[in-house]
Length: 297
Ligand code: NAP
Image 1 (cartoon, rainbow, N blue to C red):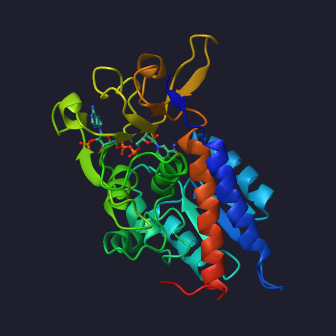
Image 2: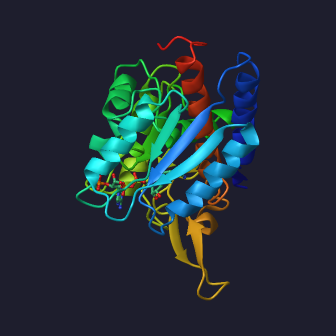
């Protein structure tokens, strides 16, 4: 039987730690605060905004979203981020991505100091991760690792695979898995669209982290029997049970892998809720550092 690795208990454990940290704050401290900056166009991002707002409210984190005006260009985004970076009442800032040209997401997010870049995707945070002195690590990478650690999947000294090498998801996850604690000391194989036959690349790996966005990529032809699968991929496909509606799916084909993989995270309900919890935890961590309760490393 394939074990279903639910994200909810992992997110709850992360939220409990965030709650304790907030409760231990000094009297008179401003509450932790998170701001999400986006272009205001209707996009799947609206769904994430609602989830972030709900998670923040449940923890006592102040949350607001800031939409750029339709005519605003890259300079307006940079100016908005500079203002938020200077604002002592703001502890975390998220920037919607991907952004269409002429916006440059990476150029913009580099306006944030490392603590406030709570998704850990700015150049300085990625550099700190590579230098094994992390401050903020991409939330989705921390979420994928948190799930694997919570369910005690084989990682330390094991051959694990990351499929996908984007600078915000797959690549930082691969670095985190290969790093000493808070990483996982794993022997990591990093695969991508040019790395050749996927089944050959995954052969002999015990835990697979898939970060692609291609439904059905992982099935019995690609995943070794008995492997554990953490499915980070998230795609929207037509829902056969509700004509005209869409549903979220991962990279793995759960039916094909049932009875074949040792375990699998569901989509939805796996990595997604843990990623939101990790974003909140990163905001609390920034709040502690910026209010002087914790030294930055
Ligand atoms: P991305 O920038 O499109 O990167 C996709 C990666 O997959 C690329 O490195 C690409 O290789 C690789 N790839 C494409 N086709 C492949 C194939 N056939 N075999 C092996 N590798 C292949 O996407 P992303 O931003 O990294 O996001 C990845 C997925 O994670 C998406 O589905 C996204 O929605 C999801 N996501 C989930 C969460 C969450 O909280 N659950 C958060 C963030 C992202 P090349 O580099 O060679 O092009």
